[in-house]
Image (cartoon, rainbow, N blue to C red; front, side, top):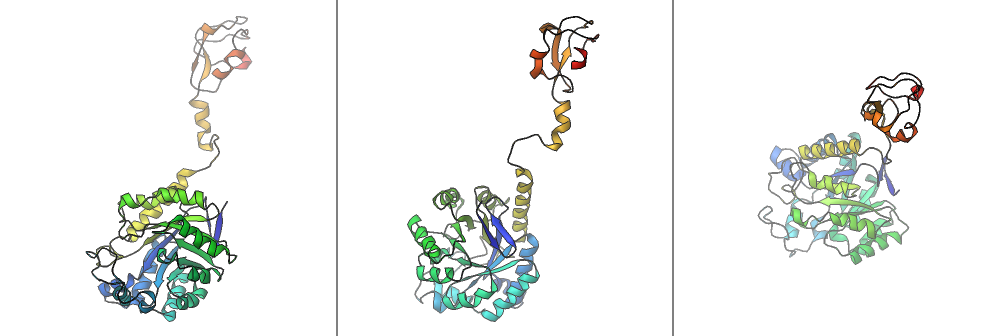
Length: 358
């Protein structure tokens, strides 16, 4: 069984999924709405995510000048996020540094949730190293092999998003990790489109990745709008995703690139409820009668029953018996053992035959 141990949590291909609430940089907008500091907003979101059932929360760590050129065009829905360049957008949300992330990591630890943040440059990767057990690599960096190698050499588990990538590009990234001696890899199916239309979610790719990369765990990073029952991410789990990541907000109505397709605490609670119910109803693998079925085995099955009165010494023929509930006598499966035998004591019509009477 494939498994990866993260802190005190074991992620395995037969256990419940590891749920990541991706706060990203949404705390800036929450801070503006609530008129509090970004750090307080980030902590509030951590607390809400932890209470709703997240195993981990994830931020994004970058500086705009290290991430995008000043003429990098927008590629998102500008009806939802009006900023017209990547550089301009990232510049609005890059104020946190090592001090803030250290405080957030400590806060996460105090609330029983794992701190994660996606690094987008070498400097942030270095100072995040001591704060988290996983390096999550963005789909946008799947061909950034020097960066992937740098992270893999730190010997932490690698979660690699695969949005907008070919199998060849994924294979090159995986091999880059493996050649460092690091074998703890989770490939995250992802569609790099915000929001992802339901018909583009392509959850079957989870199954495909599992076949092509049998030595990797498989996860899913979701960018669809939350459906009422959180069926998309629940289905991803049923299809084999051991890690589920989805953007997280406290207000899906806020303007901005990562609010309108994010889940809120209520959505996350629905998802964790789904998972908990699935854990209950999945049950055991091997078919055998359950303890709760033992009484039913006796009462709901049938026994061989007399259709006529039979006297001692009389031979039992087929027309003298039928099959009725309960199943506490001789089973119809043993009819051949009964036909032709003598009755040892009087048997009343409609009574259950037992071996003591024949």
